Image (cartoon, rainbow, N blue to C red):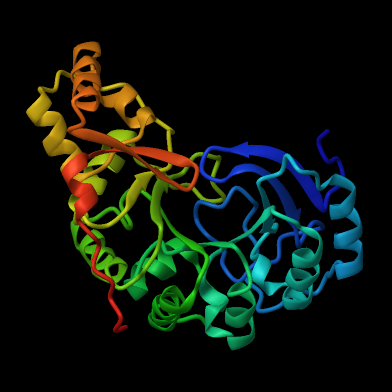
Length: 318
């Protein structure tokens, strides 16, 4: 049974995270330290803290009414930025008491990692998804329109530091906006930073809801081209299916192995990129064990079997 109140929502079957029960930490109005161009919420002034606050007791009371053993993950989110919630640490502790085997996840824009209290609180969660749309100061300001106190250099440093000590599952998300962070230069800079971040998966996507400002997303093909620009040892996953027109073409077995070597693909990717004969070639590669299916979180990726022997280098230095 779906939750109907404005604090708890779902459950929603997320392709990336499983059956998710959401907690909105700002149910009344948008309270955010960003005013992103692509946000589905109406434009609003950025804030450094929440002024309209729901009590921990109220949130836990509502959560207990809807939490059951079919829920894979409890997702902390907000109409805005969930880490601005002033009692986040207390709330996470309270959820951890009642959650059982259910995972906890937060969706955050990363900016408040510069706050040591928030940093420490997020370490208590099972899964964390950090957004990182740009690393260049000018592009970051254009896309994410942050509160003036936020400097991307400081945020990037804290994301790297968090990734090196966090024990749970860390995901990075990059949302590409046409003409802003989809340039060759910014992708290269992002790649350099991503190599310093230890994470399970890097989800790249684009605008898939009506945005707050007149900006455009990019096509699936453009996302796929961007994925190929990143080094093959980065765990890139195309999360967005918007504008995903099929581009079904023929691939030999050698083509398939070369493609999967550069970028592991999910079945969704394969359905968009391969024609039927190519899918038969892939099946034969699976049968003869030249290609293997590797599960990462809730997703399955097709990779060359020999790549299982490769271990991604762990960067211990910031």
